[in-house]
Image (cartoon, rainbow, N blue to C red; front, top):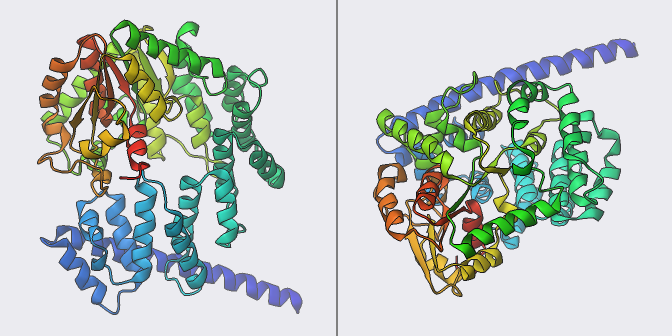
Length: 514
């Protein structure tokens, strides 16, 4: 009899999961249909409000429709969520605010985070999108807080037992970056039984950041990554390993995170160029810059998605081709180039799933830029890691370089009125305001007065750069893909170009007035 009861319960669970799967599939179809009708409507806000009022459309489908528009980088999502009063559901308003906080460069206010945590704790049994709310809240805590703060917040939100090992790894990564040895060791010990071969490679790299640099060797990390029984490791060996091996040893700065003296050498190189009035350009090429190398690999790089993400619209083919060509020509002007290294692929490696460049868009973009750039690499530039700006530049170091320069130019999507007070001790600075990134348009400090996105007007800025650049003139550039073209123009005209990227926006966002 107990066997029969167990059998019935097992079959019931299978039937329940099957029904839930069908229900989710039907809900998604309805949500996509609603989203497409909103997008095609001449007034997307009005169309959204009409669907909200229909009693037979539940909140979870409304949220799925909004999420679909967001994933498509549809301007309709921005239009609807710009004014929260358009959204009737309190739960969806919270979800939108959490998503905005995730995408914003500004730090999360502790009071706002407390509000999110309290709402989730009090309402979680009644939430129509509970799993999505939980997922976004965990992502927000992991992204915006320090490792120690995140650990405490998970307990406060009663989420400590809901965190996956993948999320634990994110906190461990953050602890390694922040030098939080105690948090790192405690978490590693707590979850030791769940450490897989893939996770052990991650921990090997991260421990290299915390320990004495003689303990962990770069080549050992590469070898261990390549030995993993993962498609990503095999693809790295097939498409990229031999290309990375052509980088001359004296030009290879990829391992600066575990060889601290290399970061000092990079700083010395930058400071020397500024002080001596040499021409010099440093740029970072990350996943988005794969846009400059269409069809370099068999995986598909989605050009239109990237344009919508950056500029809010799909470019005419002729303009797209011109920008891509200008970008490729610019690459030979740079003296120091950051690209995704094996460290980036280790960070992106999933411990649960076997992702490939053919089923993961981010991995495809990362491989595309590495392959495209290294195929054209002429062994003249120093090569470092693509996200080095996060460790190389802060407000103090930018100010130090500015003091060494004869003149300073900031090129970014930040308004002068917000950027200038941040660097009020740099009197000889000029501020060039650019049409901002689509995701930053809602930020108080962003320059939003431009009539057209940057691709349509970037050549006007090139003229300004030619007039301003020269020996002893330093340009701090935060301009995305097109910023690499700007940096090359600075170097061609004798100046120093430093692609500080998102770091500059983060500095402004963290300033009290912004």
